Length: 510
Image (cartoon, rainbow, N blue to C red; front, side):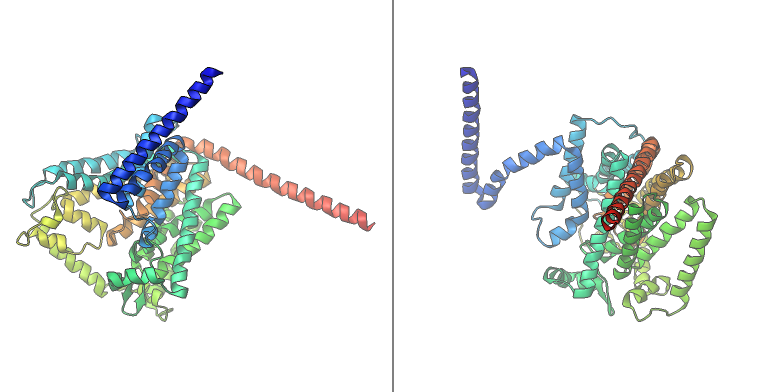
């Protein structure tokens, strides 16, 4: 008893000493750095608890990352995140990788997929970029590492985290359902903007320069809580294709209803965004599904309905009074002014980059390019496309490597959906994610949105799900059958309860 009491006293004494030391450190930081230093020390216990819980509860940390990835731009716009975006999104992902190393998970799937090979191919090219001396400027290792992380590390994180954490049927469906719910929230926010107007924070953001691209010739482009309207529209267009496909192939009625509603909501959203690329993202995704569906009837329906839609948009003036429809119709106008400006920008870049097959490089401080250096023009030229963005920095060779990475990822996923999966719902998930991925790629070709939140973890993470589906298809079939059985059992119990109620009513009446 005495020994136990002594041990307890020692623990309490140790905690008191630790708290006293933290108090002294807080006072020192306050004296040296003011309130910020004091705040940093006061947050240490909370950060320590967060790290401890994160290492212990990997699933919970992943869903935090998933949530923040989707809403971080909106939260930052309203000032709810005073820290850098990467601190609240990327650092938790790194923490998840550490947690997986400390507590590795057993899983049926392997990381050694064509997708990982493709990402490593792109990463290798970016590593070699450290030797790029095109601009003739001093090498900046910090800039090279920052760009290497931003341009490739995020892809690796998405692949590993999805493959190792979202590797059960329950988690896959949770991933997709949350994506649907988040899309509905984004749609509501766009509807609120359109119906009631922008709030003070959104007006302030528009007046700081965003109005130039969101208030165009009488057309208003709504952006929800995304970084801007193009990102919102492309995301919603690709997501609409995904959810319509899931609605067609899901076996569970509740999921079917959710996915139909989400598909319709996303369609409303990409029209509200006024982003022509959103329409292209949707159509590209749907057309790919024609080949993956293995259904002549569905192919005929999609082709006929698409033909009618394209004819209506391209050759009639139906709905011209609506600014969003009018904006979308301009996607079929080859003489559109903004498209011509983009073509002029590409021609100018082609002239300057013809002697730079490896681009300006990602190993320099772009802000320090001298005015007399011809690559200053390259840096200042607007990049309205993720592919143009990489063309500027990694050259035509880099664009080919980046495109090759995406083609390998997509082609491998399509082969899995077409040949390897037998279950209808599983094949629907794989097909829908492949179609959404192709859709967002089409958006990335026209707009600089591939690397923006929340697209990377959604669409590249979605392709990681496609690659793990063959390993867990049997588990998914068992999960689906269990859910169907549960639904039938609930129906049976409700029916029994209803019949008992009727009998009780009849006996009381008799």
